[in-house]
Length: 82
Image 1 (cartoon, rainbow, N blue to C red):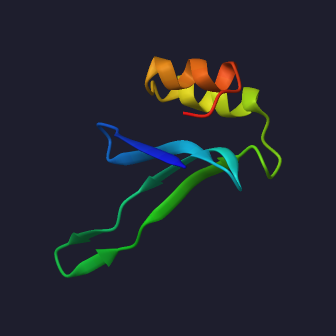
Image 2 (cartoon, rainbow, N blue to C red; image 1 turned 135 degrees about the horizontal axis):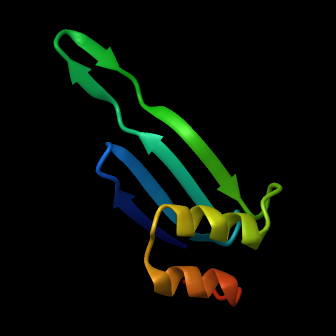
């Protein structure tokens, strides 16, 4: 299994990788934060995996949209675990 994260400038987190059970996966979310006395819970923006309905092409599009490591993009394109 592999899991990589990328912090975006707007506070979103992109987590992606490869798992023997899920295949390729990519999740985009905002982490929980405290604003004053208010707790703003984690917000899941997107979840995709190749085992449950997303093709490698779908995963690639999201990876390219968020500018993840080009070597990881190439691995998905070639269907190689990373």
